[in-house]
Structure formats: C-alpha cells, structure tokens
Length: 452
Image (cartoon, rainbow, N blue to C red; front, side):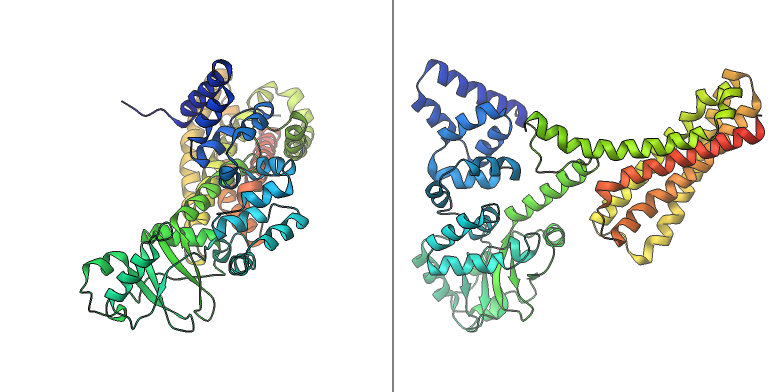
C-alpha cells in the first residue's frame, strides 16, 4: 500500500489530536503529540493557524522544546521565543548539538544569549564560541565539534578498546579523525576499516590520508556539492593551518540543500523561505506589497512604451488585439533560459570558459523557436484578419523578441551574480520587463512603419 504524503499525514495527526482533546484527556493528547519526532512536531506547528499553535506548543514536552525550535522556520521560532521565559529558553538549549545551538542562539536577544552562554560549562562554551566565530552560511558555521579523534601511532586494538570504553559515538560517525598531538589533521580512519583490519596494525598504516577535508571558510552550498559529489556521511573541518576544528555531517548538509531549494523557488516570487504560511494577514500583506509595487513599476514602463504608439493603435485595431502575443512569447522563452542558467550557476556549471558557448547556444535556440513559432503565429494572424502584412509584422516581431529573450535569459543572471545580486530574487522581474518592453516596442514600431 502506498504511503500517505506528508500533508495527509499532518492532517491525520492533527485530527487525532483534536479527537483526543474532545473525547479524552489533556494527558492523552500530550502523550500523542510527544510520541512524534521533533521534526514532525515542528511540521505540525507550521501547518496550523496561529490560534492552534500556542495551544499545541504548550503540550510539547520541555525536554523536546529545543529540538522542535531548531526545526521551525525562523519567523515562527522567533514568535514562540518571544513568549518564553528566560529559564525555559536556557532549559531548551540543554542537550543540543553545538551546531544546532549555534543556529538557535543567534535568533535570541543579546541579553538571553549572554545568559545561555553563562549557563554552559567551559568546554561547551568554548566549542560554541568557536562555531559562532564563523558566518552562519560557512562550513565553520555548519560544523559540530562533537567528534572522536585518534593518533596515528596507536594500534587498532587500542582504538577498539577506547571506543568500548566510550560506550557510544556521536551521531553520523562513519570515521574517526586522525590528528597529531598538536591537533593537526592527518587523515580519517573509517569504521569499516577499523573493524575489518588486523588489530595489531597501527592507525597510520590503514588510515585514509586522501579523504575529503573542508576548510572552515568554505560556503555552505560548496560544502553541499562536495557531499553530493563524493557521497559523504561526514567530513572533517580544518582551519587554514590544517588544525582540526570539527566535522560536518550529512544531516546538516540536507538542511542546506533543502533551504537552497526553498530559496530558489520562493525568491522567484519575491518571498523568503522563512516566511510563515499562516502569518497574520497584515504581516503577509505588507511583505507581498513590496514585490507588487516593483511589478507595478515595470508594468507602467511597458504602458509608457504602448502610449507612444497611440496613433497606430487607433488606426489599426488589429495591432491592439495581437500585441500581447509577442510580449507573452518572449516572456516564456526568456524565463525558460533564465531558470536553466540560475540552476547552472547554483550547481557551479557555468564558468568563464563556457559562457560564450552558452550564449551562442541559447541565441540559436531562440532563433529556431522564434522562426518556428513565428510561422505558426503568422498563419493564424493571416487567416484571422485576412491581412498578409499583419502576419509579416507579427512574425518578425516574434523572432526578434525571442532572440532578445534568449540572450537576456543568459546575460541578466550573469550580470546580477557579478554585482552580488541574487538572480533568483530579481532576475524574473528584470527579464519580464525587458521582454515586454522590447516585444511591444518592436511590434508596434514595425506596425507603425508597415501598416499605416
């Protein structure tokens, strides 16, 4: 039987909780909620309106609050934090991994951050401060300092006895990290190698010296690419002097990949991945109004172009009927190219060496599609209005606009990236403005010359 999708599962969970509250006891509902994983509780909180959220949040076990908060969107997490007492916030941080605690603590007010840092023992505070010293979107900001290190000169038998003494390993440990006495990174000892090799051999004889190692300054999306390319579960993080700082695990990389995907999709509409779907009406309206205002400005620019051909529109009604066809075709063609180029930039596939080829390829694609669809549009226009001149004009305008759209679809994101502007956020607006203005100007200009 097929597994229900996430939305169906969330709906059934919420209905079960409601039923427990209506027919059972508060304790039963609390038990049902806390049987879920922190990620499931977070998803449930994000999937209900504000009135139900606070009620559900009050049922969450205090020992789970920290893990749930980490899995929430930033906006919702901040709204819950505002209503929590200082003691509750400090308690929520207990047991958090250092990387999660670093993410969490940066969303707290300064006075609470100081209190949380004070509540930590010296070792944990030093580890946390090490992570906080790096940008949030870097390898140093992603890393966890919870790891197991060994020396190259000890035997595998000694390592095995050491691990048995520890009793447990940090999550997602697939390798032990080999360092010198001054904490310089040397290599890794995969657990599979450890348990399948002769116990009398030393770590240095069997360790992997060529394993992927990540510099703390590396950006998080580059870290994600390395994990994807090499199918990593974990990787050591070092500073510029190869001193071991921590490690990054696959669960943190999955979060980066998910956030990047959400950012790419939502930015195309001018939204933020941390925006709350169930935020208050006024908050949502204000946030979206900015993007609508930008769109209005570009619409007026296109209208201004049209206004310059008022005489043509008054004398040739056919032009008014057909002028949106050219702009629309250019917009779609340009968006297709823009989307592929933004994806290529995100994946690191576009470089100086292949830009010229990419420009040429997309322009040729635009030309072929332009000619093909120009013929179709011209035939429809000629049949519809019984005017061969109109067919020629709209065909020529379509070809020109698709060529411009294809070129712009490559040029706009590359230029924006050069000036440190996110092409996913602003690229579609600029592209649509270009294709609308060029499409209308070319079509109306040709109509003015050949149809009047």
